Image 1: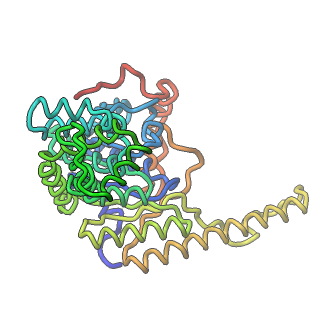
Image 2 (image 1 turned 45 degrees about the vertical axis):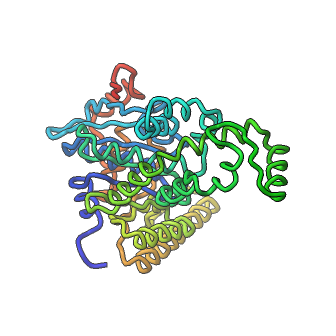
Image 3 (image 1 turned 180 degrees about the horizontal axis):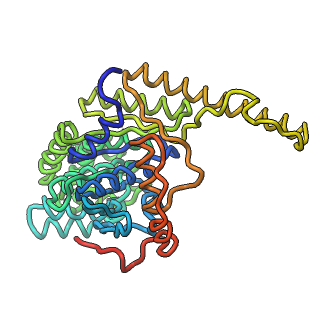
Length: 399
């Protein structure tokens, strides 16, 4: 665990890298961390986009917005601005629209595009196919990485087991779209969307009758037409998947893994860390949120209290001891993560309240990089009270 402090490593990543992917289990402050890192980069002078593929929509709440659009939206940094302030943008992945754009790009002609986009099976499941959400997130990440408006793209992922789906999405999605998988079943009966009933064997007839009984001929026809229409697009999807993998392995990218000090969350973070190593993807840092600091260790810290009820004092001392024990347990859990990974984690103290605006995100960033939250000045306090959530006229949306 030698080398520069982890906060310096993370600061360098926020300053220099092109892509930061933030992952972690649910309920550990992952989305807030992603937003705080994006804001930190923007305040240092970079043009930053933070994008979420997490359907919980927690990012909008952290930024003080009612909701996020499927296109980049610029936020008003207001009184948080510094002399080097860049810009901060935010968006939420629109899976259906991203899939449609991919079809429009790789379909051979207008007729092919129309057949796919108007296909009943495609319209119903294009946003819900296994792996499609994560695959389209990778597609959007590839597009955003080539967008000259942004110096840095920070991607907020779903909880860990879904984030691993994100890493493995190309293989899963391409396996589904590979028409050879279902061609043995569908193509003998449907050619160019027409029912021809080319049943060559008794077994084939039995399978077809069962499918007809439980799925219906119209469903089979739509499904067949869907896969046949994708036959000419498979190579384009595969080529894009390869480019995304190359992007995530590139030194200009990096992964930040977020956890709480609870053992299950730390074990998930360690599991994700090891998977990144197997896939040769660049790891940046662990961020452990909501860590309890050890209180004063002695009863004398309370000082003389002649006017307090003795039972109350005894209960207060018991709470103090429990808090002290909790802090020590958390530190042991984090120490185990550090030993098993060989990396030092950044510890962020527990905040008294949830973060729901840019000022709070700035405090989180200060805690990540400086070890303690920055207290806002009077001007920032006044601004936060006056504006509350970001106003509609304080944002701009762009394609």
